[in-house]
Each structure stands twice: as C-alpha cells, then as structure tokens.
Length: 393
Image (cartoon, rainbow, N blue to C red; front, side):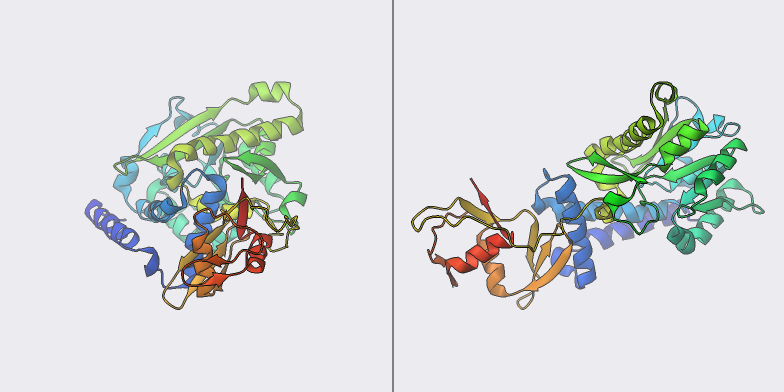
C-alpha cells in the first residue's frame, strides 16, 4: 500500500510524465498510432470537438487512466471516496445478491475495492486476458481490503460458454455479480453484425455493438440491477454514484427480447450521459473502435461525374477522416481514421493536403499552385477518388 505522501508524489510525477510531452516528442510509431487511434475515436463519437484540441484531450484521457492504477494502492483514497448510495445498496448486498454493472470511468477500480472493504460477497466477470495479466494483483488487493487472507476473489472469464448458468447459480447463493459492461464484446469469430449476442445501438454520434448477456441474466434471474459509475471532481477526489435500475415494470410488460433490448440500451445510456460531461474520464477511448463497423471501402475509388470543361467545382477540402502530420523534415504521415491505418507520405502530398485544409475552388484541368509545387487536375481527381479530399457545397 502507498502512504498518502507517496501517493501525492506519484500523482505529481504522473502529471509531469503525461503533460510535459508534445506531439513531436512521440518518438515511436506505436505511440503515434495510439494517439491517432484515440483521436479518431473521438472524431467518430464526438465530432463537435475540434481536432486541434485532441492532443490535450488525449493527455487528459491518459492521465485519468494511469491515475486509476495508482489510486487502487492508496487506502486513504478509498476511505475518502464519496459514495452516493441513497438506497443503501452496498449495505443491502451483504445479504441480497445484486447484478452490479460498472464502467471504465474515473477511478473505476475503486468500486471492487469498496465491495471488498465492505465484505460484500461477489464475483467478478472479466476477460481471460485480464485474469492472466492482472489476476494476481487483483487477488492481493482483494485480500488487503477485505482482511481475508485465506480467501480469494472469484474471477470468472467472460469467454466461458457456460457463464450464464454459473452466474445464475452464484446469484441463488446470495453472491453478487460485477460486470464492466464496456470492456469487451465477448468471444466470437463472427463479425460484429453477424454476432447474435451483440445488439447494435446508437451511442453518442455513432453506434456500437453491445453485449446483451447482462440483460439476459437479469431477465432470467430477476435479480436487482444496479449501476455504479466512478468519477473524479476537479480536485481529483473520487466519487461513486450507485443507482438502482427499476426492472419490475419492464419484466411485467415486455417480452424477453424487448426486455433485453431495452435494458441493454438503458445501461449504455447511463455511460453515454456520463461521457457527455466527463468524456476525458473514460478508458474506452483506447478500444471503442472494436465495437463498431469499420468502413472497409475507404480506399475503393468512388465514381464521380466529370463536369464540363469550364464548370466550377464545388469547394474542395481535406477529408475529416484524415489526420496528416509532420514528424520531422524527412517523415510525414497520414492516418485514415475509418480503418485506423497510418502510412508514410511524401512531402509533396503532405503539402498538398495541408493546402486543402482551407476550402479551395477549382476548375477541371486547372493547374494548382501551392507556392512550392504545381499540381495538375488528374492528381486532384485521384485524391477525390480516394476520399482524401471531399467536395462541399
């Protein structure tokens, strides 16, 4: 465990590590790809945020994600966490099993530690990869906060095909179940749109494929459904908002399919409302592109109608689905945000695309002078066909 003074020093060091870095300091393609992947996800789901603000926003996201790891090793942070639980759900769950749904927001690891500290009987459902990589550390923290050195937390892999039956059994025995609903889509070799275990729903300004298993478990078990959302305030103090989801009316009035669809959308709606105000506190920006259909046809040329020789084109501007950046004098890169590919481009292409960040009008067969190079129309047409440039009215 960390003392409070050591914790504060680690937070200070983390801030320096995250915020004392500029975009040009990212010296590996791996880090560059990570930044542009997150930026592309933000562009997809929150297009109202200007791309010029993405780098600072990504820094905030990285800071909050890393701070969650530090938080879990400081007992004082848990003891000082503000718990909003008007229905006293945590206390009641010592004797009555609940289906807890939580999210990778704020200091999201704190919720499990809270249940451990309050000695609530529960099991955790997570990916097998998490169990392999963090299972041991999770067990050690569970013992530390629960004061049960001779007992381990039961962690069940979400990939288990018999998981539903095992969870039904746990709930009957009075053991609550904890899910991080926004962490994975389960195990399947099928594409998202062919996986019957996933439901396509609207999410922010796009869509996601959401797991339906939690809603099915609630439908079959009739167990109480509770959400727990962790967040930080402006002083980095931790809060956990615990909310009971009323399901009795839905169980009474809706069919099984209708219930599952309604509850799944409701659970993701809770996350959506949180992100509209606290989008920098969600770890999901690192992987949400795995939850929606990618456009596989980005590089397929689109047929365009050739205008008359003297017809003025609609204004051309660089596509919103591209990031272009200069790494140094010899290296220029283009990132396609629809399929998350990064490629090295020539200085001349970089200059041309940079030129079209400001809308430009052209005529067919007109030569374009950017100052350092002359570009003829066939090159411009090729960029339109590749969706690198778009036409606007």
